[in-house]
Length: 216
Image 1 (cartoon, helix red, strand yellow):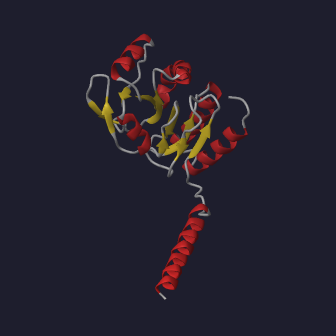
Image 2 (cartoon, one colour):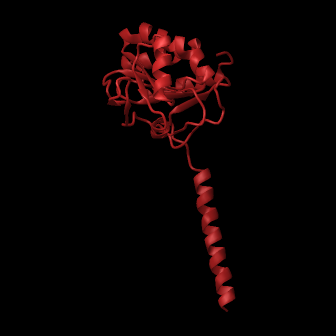
Image 3 (spheres, helix red, strand yellow):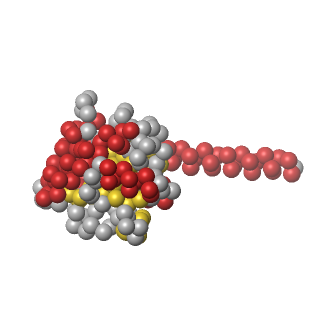
C-alpha cells in the first residue's frame, strides 16, 4: 500500500513538472522584447540574452579616476554602451568606429560608454594609447555583474547596448559592430528621440532590417 502511494506521488510530481515545463517553453513572446542581433565576428558565439531587460538598469563601476560612477550618470542621452576587453581582437577592431560615433553623433545626443571587463592597469594603458576620449567604466570581475544587469550572459565579447534618451533599451548587439549596422541603428533611434517613431516600432523595424541584411 505504501509502495503504491509512493509511486502515485512520484507520478503526480512528474506530471506537474512536465506541465509547467511545457507552459514555460511555449509561453508567448512579447512584441516589447528587446532586439538582439548577433554577428559572426564576435570573440565568442556563446553570448546570450536571459530575460529581456527593457530599460537601463542601475549599477556603478569605477571610472578612470577610480571613483564609483553610475551608468545613469548621463540623463537625457542616448547611450551606446560597449562591453569590451583589451585582449579581445574584435573589440579592438571596432574601437575606431566607436570613437567616430562619439565625435559624429554627440550633437544628436548620443553618448558612448565603454565598460571594460579587464584589469584596470591594462585598460588605462590601452585607453591612453588609443586616445579614447569617451567615458570608461572598469568592471574587472564586477563587469560580469554589470552584463548580468542587462540580462546578458557575458561569455563572449564585444557586445553593445543602445538606448534612446529616455533610457529605453532599443537593441542589444552581440559581436563586432560595423559602420552600416551602427548607422542604421542610430538613425532609427534618432527618430525615436525626435518623437517620429515609437519605441516598439523602432525595435520591430531594426529586427526586420538587421536580420534581413546579409552584409555587415
